[in-house]
Image 1 (cartoon, rainbow, N blue to C red):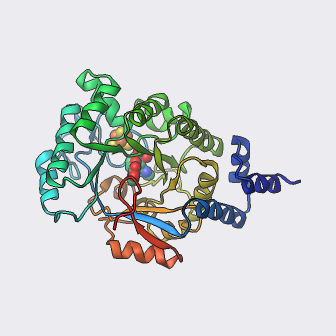
Image 2 (cartoon, rainbow, N blue to C red; image 1 turned 30 degrees about the vertical axis):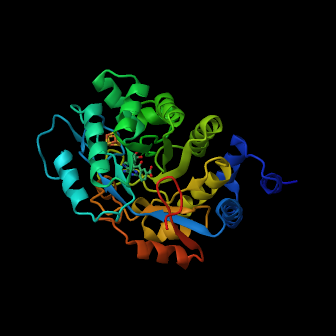
Image 3 (tube, protein in one colour; image 1 turned 135 degrees about the vertical axis):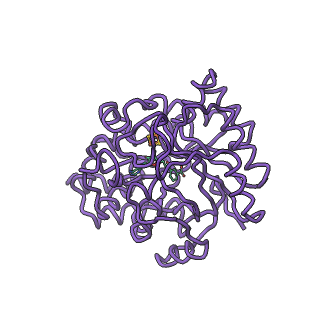
Length: 361
Ligand code: V47
Ligand code: SF4
């Protein structure tokens, strides 16, 4: 039996792919085969449904103590004000929240640079503010990298930090800051920030406390297929222990205005193959998200045929973390109606979800 037919038989009996098999699929599986298999796996989990939500993004600041080489967004904390800098507090968030009618959003996603002067109390203030203005909205906020810094700055353990944020209204953690877990690749692209073990530890503690989370993977830069598989294997192992990850979100590296701009970007075909392998390998993470802001709407739409069941949401924000790095959407926002139309265009049924993937009426 060829390796491909062996893998097909394994998937047919809902067996689990090994690392070697996943690497083989990345390197050698025909694209049509990958699409069909990933689509079948997706259908088994979600049937015809494809999910979206009504969310907004808020990025408090682009000042950051780190200098990830792929990041086009951060400014060093000791740099003077420059074009494109911002440093918002609760007043700016409040303005954004007040502009939204009650019940018009179900989620506020907050993430940004790691500001040198801000500890957990700042995070608590933001969570309380959202919950005060929109009591029904879910707060998905702060990557593990931000949590790690809050803990250090405030002299607290990781668990105490998460508990304080949870008490202030934090509902789940977004998946950012994961990048690629392999230590050598991480050193090259994101030296200095929370290492893989700490990123995973923070999500493990969050899951234990009852906070669900997401996980991203930044791909298409200096990593190879084995680094991607290693990254997903670490997530799969943790998920076997906790079950706390809701969604996996591959993010294509965008190459404008950063220290790695000499690298070219992954092609749409590579994006789609990556989604398919992720759907097949991560058999225990229920949702696979195509983040349209980063991929552009055309690729995100096609991804619905390659294992993806979720498009994130309306977003509606400056979301400059991506546009500064070259993402097509300069002021990203899609209406619910447009998201539904995109989903229907692939023959699927749009389902509005809340942040925990429960259907919203
Ligand atoms: O960790 C930064 C990425 C992430 C670039 O959990 C870049 O629902 C590509 O995690 N090219 C933060 N990517 C965003 C994030 C996220 C987004 C949407 C939904 C969710 C969720 C999480 O943005 C960072 C980093 O990997 N990023 N710069 C760049 N040049
Ligand atoms: Fe800072 Fe995040 Fe940019 Fe890294 S990716 S420099 S942690 S804002």
